[in-house]
Image (cartoon, rainbow, N blue to C red; front, side, top):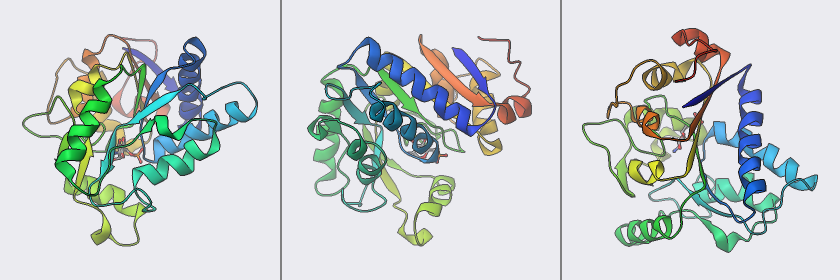
Length: 248
Ligand code: GLP
């Protein structure tokens, strides 16, 4: 794992956007694995800016997103399809037919099968990952087992609580989501995991401070990947006693 320690959230997002931009520069038809949440939301403006300044071209890029809430239609303001359109796709020259987000309404089992087929259709060149307070990646929640492929996940109460800030009322937060599986995430050619702020310190400690692969902290799986970059801020590094000079 390559570990980068940044000053703060903003620098984390900037560094992450630079890494994604390098992948597109090397491969103009790259397939990006994308994420939602407030961390990813900080990355996309840098990609939009690079596009506006003529430094990035998304015309041949395709994308696949980690997850989608079950029960929210694509045009629901809190759906992840809506999030992606609003924060990235509608602001760059990507062909939206080449952007895959699982469908959270209709026949969910069929949607999961279709999502699996889409994921398998082509390797992901780089997968962007945030991390949940409970260590989830995508929506793969802590538990006794983790899943290889896309599936429906029951969300933990802590995840529902954490994501309630985006909804008018906690009762509106969906209890289930379709998520890419941990195996599918691991099969991306590169992983880029971002974590900032003290509430992510425990999850990151499990990833950087020991050698355990812990199903109760899905973020720990990232240590198995041969080409993973983890970007954390000084606050987390300080809290977990991570030595900035050390990369493992
Ligand atoms: C959601 C997403 C995850 C994301 C997580 C962290 O639960 N499904 O993919 O990593 O949020 O979000 P944030 O960056 O807002 O802390």
